[in-house]
Length: 448
Ligand code: ME8
Image (cartoon, rainbow, N blue to C red; front, side, top):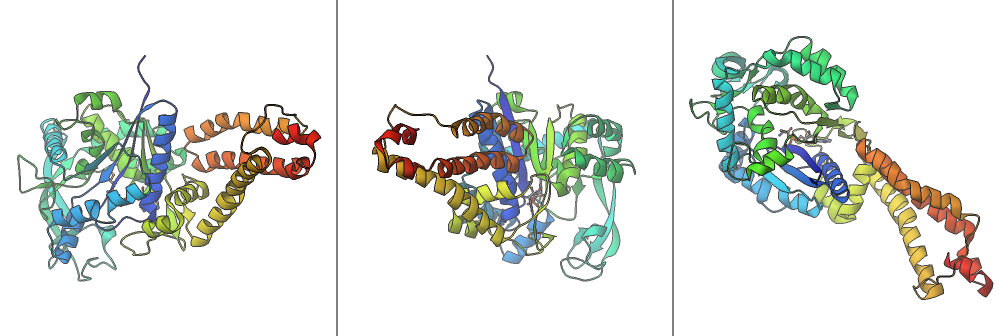
């Protein structure tokens, strides 16, 4: 019989700076899901990686006085970089893609060409706001008080030749996908996509630029580099060997389409509109689900590298242990919603759940088994009136846990587990083993 397969991915993160607790949150959730599916006997492929091209990284490298490649190499592979962080956090990824990897670059060039030959990519004119001193184009929304976000000087309207993807052509099919299937989760995110983006009319998407160099050159027109989304989104397929020889063809055949892409809510638009449209253009199967999770907030605002209000996962994991941090991230924040991060919450969680409830249950149980029976329980045991309720809780746990995990409700799955732990602690209090230990007659009850 064919083994069931499960393919899950994180976003590929920008190595423009060290990653923070928000990135860690998404990766930890993906890891928890991957481990859960492996335990269930699935053949799991868990992909993560880094999205290494673009103007921002080009500028950052220039500031640091290194080449863009040296810059990203350091953030990804260097000390306390992305890979070190995932190692510290016990992330069990099966594959790590860097968009500067040769096989990915070659595959993206082929994909771009195929879409061009089909007529879904065409040459047009990009109009935007241009900062002449920085030689950079910006979108209206990137401007700060109408000026260049980098140097603060005024910008001018400018144009450049660019390639566009015919996103408009796929609007109806994408709308149907969002409205009539459970492609996008949680379902509460569908309305925003349909009403804010699809219904007002989808514009074709700019997919190449000539104003910077740090990107994958369009091979049939090399003054252009591929701009962001074709390069970034197709990572999910090139990492399975699609249009390249790095990995066996069978990986793509086995694992594509993805079962779920976990992503943050700010990139739901790209994954639920642009991504399926591009796959439709390529005549490729669509992922089964895209799940847009919420943000970790700090003082009510999104934590982000550009705002500088970030929490360093390295510090927390080193101080409190990776497992405690993983537990906190999954237990305190409902996956689909935003949540406020604070050190108090983290410390309370560790003290209450892990030290008190779980730690106490473990140490009481093992200490008493050791003290009263030398660590080896006798076969003769007496049932008591307190047993049935606890047994019922425990025996129903697996089904409750699985139902929550299948709904991506990590918080509830852990609450189920801790409910049993809480019940077990109460069971000990109610049966008072330290009293039972006082008489030989109650030893079988104590053993139970
Ligand atoms: O968007 N709370 O990369 P990125 C929760 N390269 N999650 C957060 C977060 C926060 N405060 N901040 C970031 C990109 N994240 C693109 C993606 S995919 C083909 C290309 C998580 O480095 C969240 O999952 O900005 C978000 O989607 C991701 O980091 C963005 O990382």
